[in-house]
Length: 83
Image (cartoon, helix red, strand yellow):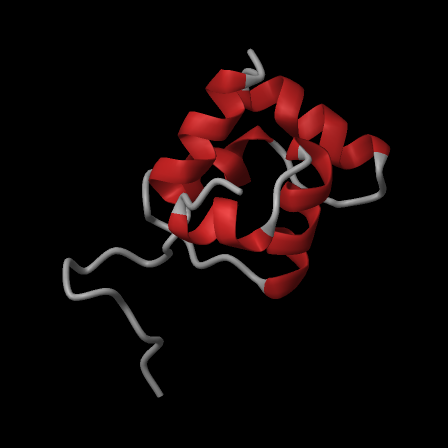
């Protein structure tokens, strides 16, 4: 069964918001990966690169991890909506 994609062919909804939120905190991809690893999430820089370039799907656990490390809500990460 094929995985769902956006109409544009992208494999996830968070790529642009992840880049924006990461840069807002002055995190490189490597630093974000390090922060995730400190919290017990097994993600490296290559995973973040593939997510940000829409070459990889994002799991629910990864969504939770990004929200935790970047201190944002799911809405902020997925839709870019700020409270």
